[in-house]
Length: 144
Length: 144
Length: 144
Length: 144
Image (tube, rainbow over the protein chains, first blue to last red):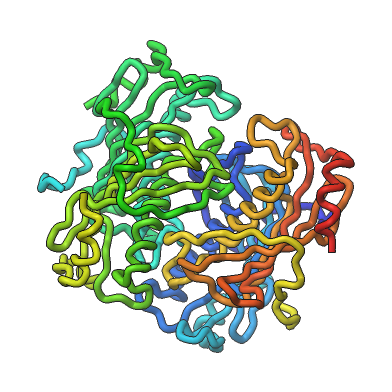
């Protein structure tokens, strides 16, 4: 709960547009805190799919999630459209630390800021596997 | 399980575009059957909101769901984009029977067909309340 | 929307106890209509697992969902405990039509009644496969 | 990603038993990372409800979530039964920092460890409000 000001759009490198759903709003009339993690998964895996770094059918090697976190600065509410900003904080040998900013509609400061740690593992046994050079080449431009 | 052929896009009057999410895919690698109902809620309530027939903040009168159903003709899979076709099968005094077709990407036959029965009620006590004439006027063009 | 009275516990053969979650409550303060389908999936697949009729790891033959439906008679609300009553309405060669009653806490009439059609298929290609005699033998006592 | 060993049951003060659902398992056959947050919400709010610190109907003052985090040590899989261990890391004037351990079945080391920051606010405007003495008295025994 440090008092750093919320991130702005310029803190991120690429963006993906995500919809909210009616059912994301909870009893308090705002998007429930767990839904942000559905958005992180969708943004990161959507980007990986679009860039050929994720295979949907029977992959032997996958990215699994080792750690996640989120700070909530402001409410988001269905039917808001979300712009998920993404950058890579750390590109390791077999791990990627993503930073994700959740921006609602045309608001310029982040409604929420997430951290999402992916580890590149063999599905069988969950042992980490170094990412191939080609994968690192695609991820490198997102490092900031 | 009648052997009527799946609906086509021409069976519906208005369409809404919906995203799938990574987490919609279940252990079988396709969108889980319950997710279709999240889509129905989002399509119908999104349309109602856009047309001024739904209020998000502290409404006294709401549409609640009395009955739902879905037939699944074909798999949908994240990251498919969904086109939800909508028409009204029956416009009652205080109820609306929606028919919803779930179309994936540019496929012309429905991957799933839903039925979604809304009842117009007072939130307190859940007693049905006739829809105002203005609401019926907005819903009427969707009846087919 | 026939005016048949809600089912009672005696209409079902076996029961499973299910929890509600905080996030099941939607903006209207009750469990959202789609959550009932998560409960159907959990009750039916939980029973199949317990009876050796479902395999979690890399199954070649699975039950997939062809059709679902639910009538909502009364609200359920987190933290209600749910008793899901189950019976088989139709035991086909390669399909099972389940009826599921959702009972809240110690209420004797159903808060909701669901229909859940499972088809026994080869995962690859989704062609239906007759259920083995041993499976039918386990399912038969639930037919009513 | 510090290399502290996973927590054990003795690190927590109170426990709540939670079910997994069929649909919690994602395409990798394990409970998706976002589901852990549904469990945190359910465990914490369930405890608050049981102890008279949360009101479900039209509360003016609520606990909202300001920050969440989770480290995943091991997979959990439906139909595992979860034992959610809880303790309070910091009891502030108007905030509570919860630590939550997710234990599967009878495993003694945590499958996941969460942090969940609640702030006591007026629903209208989201301004923080000091917790009453009686609430602090109920929360105090969980501080460790």
